[in-house]
Length: 528
Ligand code: MSP
Image (cartoon, rainbow, N blue to C red; front, side, top):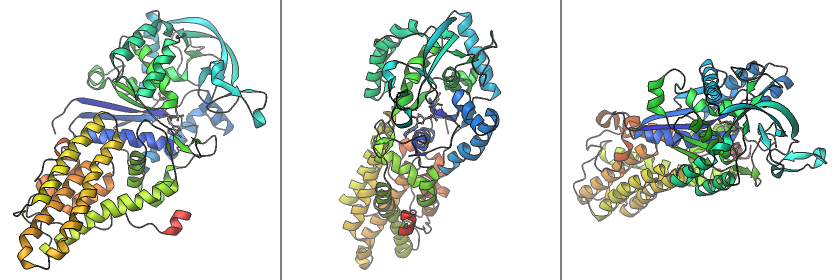
């Protein structure tokens, strides 16, 4: 496949202090669907994910579990975070851990560069620190505690008490970048998206930027500040740099030039780090700012952000064990407009699984293949008598494929899935109206039956290609059953931007049978 334009997409790197929940899975899936789409379009794609292993939160959790932080991280990465990628069928190209040598070396080189050019200097700081966020907080971001934290100031996000810290630290002169950042948001409206996120960031930066404390000396789990080894680099300053250290910032100029800049997907709670601090760091170092920072919403349970610390965390395997990874991927992308919050409910998941995946798509695929088997001995016929209704299907396929690609471009995967689903719905309607089972009973209608079966099979060909970034397992099964590979090649090499071009599956293709792609789920499994 020819290498097209670069598409480098990242997820946040996760704290492996705890196990993943479906909120983390959601970001992984969204990034993976976008990456798979671009890869299949022939873009020079790279998907990076990983873990954020330094800082106080990691150190404290490890200590509480009688382990060293490195050991703790190793264990959680091995037992929980790498398996998450398997569970959700994520085709990442790299996995960075901030304890890796390539990263630590890059962080040291980066801070040294900023120190040498005068963007980092020593100073004193006193402020409230939230270990949950790993961030100093303004008093406006704190609320009064309740229950066992009555009488204390707590973080509005984590509902745990903040700590008053006083340190002599190194500071990044972020305040100098206010005007350049505002100009960036103005000149490149796409830089921060969606619009609500952009507005929030602009308002925040307009209200003034302070310098940022970027070192700690009260504990030592982090990257040492190269010119003063009593300090370690602040965990967020360290973590943000993963996006460049993973692609050769310190040592592999060619790869860095090929991949950078990136599209960053982040949850809205960590938007400011990515849309304010991170571009300021890059500007100070004379590097390009990211292509885009896109903030997605939260998965809510009972109206609140789902979280482990609030005991509302749901493990991704709880869903995939019953419904499979394709259903997880489909459900979260389809049900939640990307960029907005979405309430998770088992009922909604089960209902969409049954109506859309099993009855809508799965059933369509099995029916068409079974009819080609039964009425034409498993060989896709030539469509000699194409009629009005067949042409309408062609047009829907063409238009939906174009619309889906445009939706992916504007980071609206939910719209892309909805556009592709028009093909599913229209093909189902087409079969109901054309009644191939009735045509099969009338020998004089053989030409029409050929056209209907050929149209439906070609529609499935387009669906397999277009849906493969979203539900890769089901589409691989469909591709095999369609018998498309001998004529068209492997599914993952089908150029997705040409998926809507009609007439690719040749007449004479021999199809196989297809087990239900989305089998019925027993009631007991749902109530378990
Ligand atoms: N380690 C930092 C990120 C550093 S990136 C340079 C971090 N890690 S985290 O593990 O706490 O969170 C990672 C991501 O998970 C964030 O984008 C956050 O928004 C997301 N989510 C955590 N809970 C979530 C939901 N309930 N719903 C959706 N996403 C959620 O922050």
